[in-house]
Length: 128
Image (cartoon, one colour):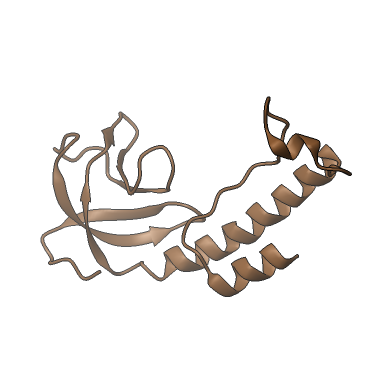
């Protein structure tokens, strides 16, 4: 409950978590009264649902702004600009654009969901 209250007050942009599982040699393995794995998973789900709402609200604030990005990956379905590849959400743009991985571009953010931003290439200066 303390952690959920902290998340709601801090409104962090990015949060991830996992349920504890014993790891060879970990001191935590010796703690008395371990949390039941089903309860631990339920708590993880509540935490991540709370963070998904916060993330959605935070990303919505970026709609209408412009940012610089480096193209991380180009696939047939989309072009992704990762803020931190393989960890954070991405900024997605039209896959038909003539860009390649490594290009630095300016993007106007047009929409968002719980974890990702959507945008279009622009020549506007960076605002954030």
